[in-house]
Length: 166
Image 1 (cartoon, rainbow, N blue to C red):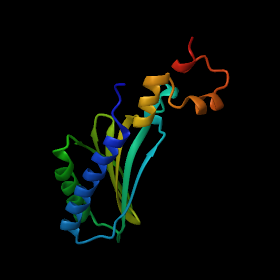
Image 2: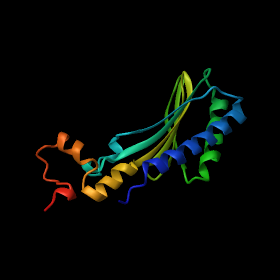
Image 3: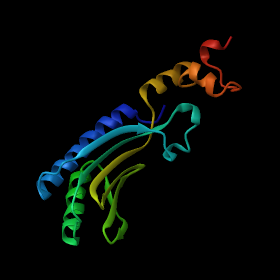
Image 4: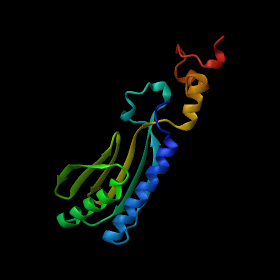
């Protein structure tokens, strides 16, 4: 399988998210971050056959914050750009900017980092489409991620697990 491991990407993005949070804490003072790592299905996997079980690894970090003024937001963007640039993320630019709400995007291929400020300051790091290791191993062995579950989902499927092929 050509897709990266969800577990590897999740670990990589947890570390990257941590370095961004540390850099923002150094710049803005210590913030009380809530961190939510997860692996979830996504439209980013639309080009991947459904039976492969493609997912996106994502780490979202939020810290309650007062309204961030223009000068502070400029510093936030610069700090994040410096923190993620060495990891290959490019500054794509403003996604949204309106009273009390801002978003800025950094990307590395299909992976992206969105920082936003409204009622909270948040950093969202997400991969492109990746495979969980257990789905990768089962797909390589059986042709489908989990044969028993596959049969429940698709009882009329023409994809037959390798162990059942005569």
